[in-house]
Length: 295
Image (cartoon, rainbow, N blue to C red):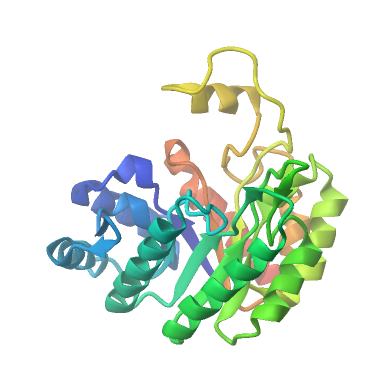
């Protein structure tokens, strides 16, 4: 049975337990089955270690709400970043400990990315993930595609084919792929057919789906640079990975959901917190469409 979720927003929560409680209440009231926590918004892991008292306080908030939980590793975690690798591995291990204590059964992480021509680095990431996943066989680990790769970048998620090859070489029952539909749409510069083709190819290997809307446009907007308000500038221009409510952008949401007849994981919405008034509408859209697809 497909479950439908909505992610928490680490920057809005910012370690505030009251805000975490409010976020989870909003997600539950909107009709979600689950919520995807984001590790760097919880303040449970600091300096590669779990803070026990903080962990207990967060779990107490989680248990107040009738939701299942998945967890996203920090958005910046990058196992192809040689300079930060030991830090990222330490955070990953600590995150796994928290997940095990909290009863979280799925961890999502962004595939590594690096400017390099040394593809043996990808094999090293593969070995690291094998070790991490083997250490926690009760948790499903899912690697997610990003939306921008430069010509000089290497990554195990540059294409659907590379993601499948990585999956097959990992060859563990508790390793799957996350397909972020919005990221794929941006990666293909708004080419609906190419995004849907990727979904078709990856479906047998997908354990998790991220869903949000955008316009498939990657150009930099003219105007102010990064800083307070820049996210709003991107949104009003319709540019980039802006995590819009479903139907507000150009992604063929209905066509994508229609392909999930045999999917048995979570469809997790990643709608930006500023649009929290739309959570219920977008969740209902997904639920109704999936009812039609699955009879």
